[in-house]
Image (tube, rainbow, N blue to C red):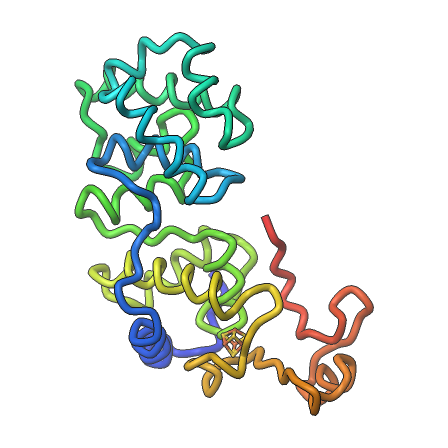
Length: 246
Ligand code: SF4
């Protein structure tokens, strides 16, 4: 596993600083139990949390349990979740997930990563979201925001979400995994966007990717040379970390 540029101690310091900047970070999906969060997280693929939250009240009124969802008629379910996009495949995932929860787990969402990722439509990120937020089991979801922000800061170094999960997990106590993920996601949405707002960032003193912005900022190519980074037309002068938007 590649070693991140920053030590575990620096990683913990950076996360403490970002946690102060974004107090109360938590998933923005609305849920009342692990089943609802699992279904909402499946629906959140390629969709905003806000849109998912508009759809789930009616969905859970109609299908309040895995047993009810397992028996859903595809056309009824698809109509309810259509605004979240990819509604046919999401419908298949929801019904498949619910059936396996009923058949193999007695209708109870399992509090175990291996069992969760064995459910239809459930990947490692979704499983970690549910573990960390609804089941009291440490989970460190790595989405595109965590991937981008952690690589820029230098607290992780990989394009692979599983590698980044392990790098961050090794640097942080398990009890802080989920909060760290939620904090990095909020930081990625509010400050460290694809075009980052570095002048508003509390972690810029430790960051390996600070960008100077504003009227006095040098041209992108000169910024990159000053930072010692290779310049390419694709990178537009930013230090290229090879992090792709998923
Ligand atoms: S200094 Fe800039 S690039 Fe670094 S984490 Fe903050 S916003 Fe992102």
